[in-house]
Amino acid sequence: MGKNKLIDFILRPADDLLNLFFPEACVTCGTSLLNQEKVICTICRFKLPKTNFHKWEGNPMEKHFWGRVNFERAIAYLYFGKETRVQELLHNLKYKGRDDVGTYIGELYGSDLKRDSVVSNVDFIIPVPLHPSRERFRGYNQAYMIGKGISDATGIPVRKDFLYRGAASTTQTKKTRFERWKNVEEIFYTEKKEQLNGKHLLLVDDVMTTGSTIEACSRALLNGTKVKLSVATIAVAM
Ligand SMILES: [Zn+2]
Image (tube, rainbow, N blue to C red; front, top):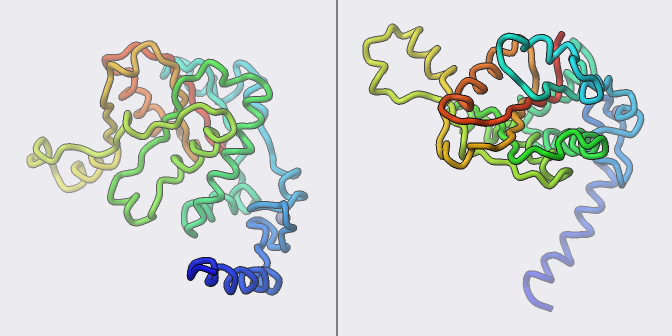
């Protein structure tokens, strides 16, 4: 038996034993997950407040953007509410290092979208970028994890090399400190525009509240390109 195999042989039962005493808990209600369950238990999963916006042309999210951004579709998986399962999911995803929550919920959403053929003509999934310093701090971009989950379920590639957040520092020397901060946080820009032309892009984020981030990303993606745009978020507060 090789060394690695031996280590595996010793450690695997220990891992099983750990799982027996400390089984993974449902992120939203805390009960122990069964073997085939991931992230949330089956009961919580069935109680998720789905919007079904993807089956509803002219849904409230689409109306919200009318006259601001010309989206093909604007859709969200779940309704956001304070002190709900959805808030718990997002809190774990953003502040507790649970990047697996993003991929899993993304996968669930992706399977719904695939089943109802909503994203069949989308070419690329584009996660809303985090500012690089914030991404380093968190260790991952939650929107990317969601995009990856949707990608796993639909087979549409997720690309983080088209849309970026941040600003070149050279143009910022004459601004006040607040303006500089605002600028760095809110500026988005695109690269490889020639590869975007003629494509249908699905912008992905965790939650939509005012829609200003999504609008800023859309302006960057539409600037100097001819693309079709849709947007999908995990939650919507409206
Ligand atoms: Zn649960």
